[in-house]
Each structure stands twice: as C-alpha cells, then as structure tokens.
Image (cartoon, rainbow, N blue to C red; front, side):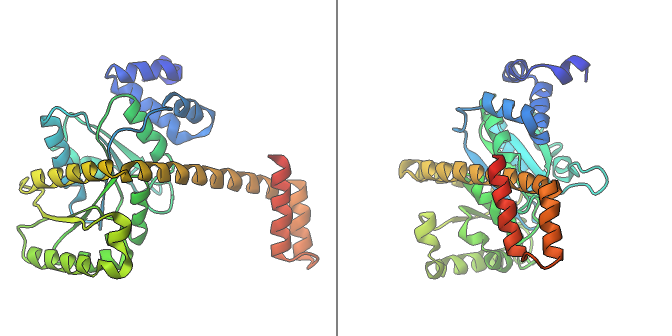
Length: 325
C-alpha cells in the first residue's frame, strides 16, 4: 500500500470505497479498529447509516458456521445483492491480530463478497468493540445485508444478539449442541435455528431436541420477549442443501419484525448499548489514568496503610475522574 493510501483523508477514502475500491474500505475499517481520533472521524462520516439488515451467525466451534455463511453469501451474490461479512476471529497470541480461520473457510464459496476478519482483542462475548462502527461504515458504502459471524467461544455468544437484527444459531448433530445452546441461553436470543450437517446421523434428533426446548420456551418467557417461535431449518452447508430455506427464514424474520415495529426497537436498543459500552471504555481509560497519577498513588498508599478501605478509595478515584471530565 502506498504512503498516499495510508494517509489519505477519511472523506476521500469513503468516496473511493463507495466507488467500489475495496482497499479504501479496508483502510477505513483499520482506522476504526485502531480507535482514537481517526476512528471518531470515520464514525462521523458514517453517521446516518444503519438501515442495512444485520444478520448474526453464531454457534459452537465445528458446527459449520463459516461454510454455512459462505454458502449464504454465495446465494445473495447470485441474487444481485451486495453482502459483506465480518468474521470475528480469536486474537492471535503472537500478533494480536485475527487468526483468519473463518476467512480461509469461506474461500471458494463466498468469492466476490467483501469479507473482513476482525480480532476480538480480548473483548468479552466474541464481538470486537469496533463491530458497531464497522457495520455502519459497511452500510454507508452500500453493502447489504451485513453478516457478523462470531468466534463460537461459549456461553457469552449471546452478545451477538446485541449487534444483529436477526440472529441465526447453528448447531450440529451428535455433539449435544442443542442442550448446550439451551444452557447458554442462546435459544432465548436466536431468531432462526439451523441444524447443519443434516446428512449426518443424529440430525433429526437434534431437531427434535430444539423443537422440544422451544415448546418449553413459555417457561422462560422467550416467546413474549422475542415475538414468537424461531423457525428450525435443516441444512447441509457442504452441499448447499437447505440453504435457500435458511435464506427464506432470515428474510421472513426481517419482514415480520419490521412490520410490527420490533426492528426499530432492536436498533434503538443496539444504539443505547453501544453508547453505554463506549462510556464504560472511556471511564476505564480515565480510571487507569487516575490510578497512575499522583493523586492515585496517594489513594493507593492510603489503602496500603489501612487509612482507606478499597471501597472508599474507589469512590475517591471516581470523584477524581469526574473532576477531569
């Protein structure tokens, strides 16, 4: 990449990205990931975006999420759509970057789509902190729908629901995924359930387990919160069988929640959560600065000498942070 590309103003990069230049879009996303003033500038340029359908794809490792996502993207491209994928990967312990596993598995099935791997950088829940801003940016340059595929790291995968309009939960037969999904609370946030690898033994049992757990959903109040029973679809991503039904289920869910106002409500909640998350991160940064300051050192010394309790020290540091705002 040339020095000009690295230092080009964000408005220029945005116009180039809208014209189809993928390198310009990639550079803008890099600025979002790095944070700071440049990230804020890009976020300001993407203000007003947010109408694209955001589809979250989650599930346990090995359930076939990446291949399924790639196949879905292929169908969208064939239909003349312009999808983009954010593959949220674990952070490399050596480089701090994304491991790129999901991106590798999409090669050959999602060719032609914009696919970006993004490292979690330790963010709890498998979702990188930069995801909401990146989604708005992708929307601003004309991509739709937007697919967020998560790492599949465990019970905190429910975070995907806060970033998506429609959440697709992928399970595989024979691994107890249906039971684990219920224990993790994923059934309470899933809008479409996909039993992948449906050509394998145990697929019908997995579907039966999911249907049974959904039948019991009234106990947790799932139906009242999510607006109805999720659809269960059988699919085999390696062959493409059932993928059109998955796409239809996702589109049906979007139409349903758009018609009754729940789509707008989900997006309002998403913006609120993003603002709250940014406030938390800013406070964490200010708290770290306060701890490293002379006043912070004095407060910590008072704790060590038993002149202040940790609770009193925290309150004193919070007051210090408040004065600095």
